[in-house]
Length: 245
Ligand code: 9D3
View 1 (cartoon, rainbow, N blue to C red):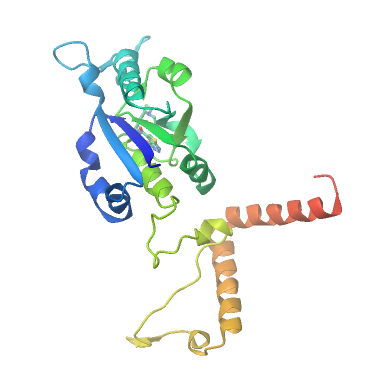
View 2: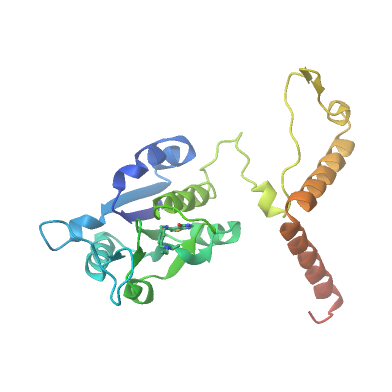
């Protein structure tokens, strides 16, 4: 069964190229994912298509209204079973990680709700959303790009989404290390040569070199990942020895 993904947005057209190209495009064409876009503005109740209003209590900006968003979610939920998790893309959400991507890839249906420029009425969060997701601590114009990030990351975890030359192992995050340096022909380019070990044909030495490079690079660039790796190692040892955490 295909993973069904509903996108609720004010900018359906932003997804055009994304849904037709590359791995996601192929997953759509092969029926691995079934993506439906719904324009929240269709659920406005006035002739102007109003979906936002001024915040109670004053202040800058506008707020996405409950009514059109709730009606939009109800409408897509009626289209097909299962009900699906409603995921709100917001800067206050749970930070996206490979672990969260893995959780989402296990669902049968995702309903992604993207706002633009502005916040959601709090009652959308408290009464409609099953989860709020952020893609990081930087300010974007809306939840559309984050929705694409979620779809891209989830799709590549679905069985059959990757071709045989596209590695299915999420190497860098699966083993908690960044990737080792890679080279291809030519052997020398503008005086820059490929490390000798990679030309040695000694697979043991090559594997050791790559592990070492990955460790060095991760320690230098991502001390946070290194600290997590150490913690995981400690946890595993404690499990074996029965020591308390
Ligand atoms: C005035 C406070 N702003 C919060 C920083 C309001 C606001 C700005 C931008 C509310 C929403 C947005 C649009 N961003 C998203 O919808 C969004 C987002 C992001 O900006 N960064 C990282 N992840 C996400 S997920 C959705």
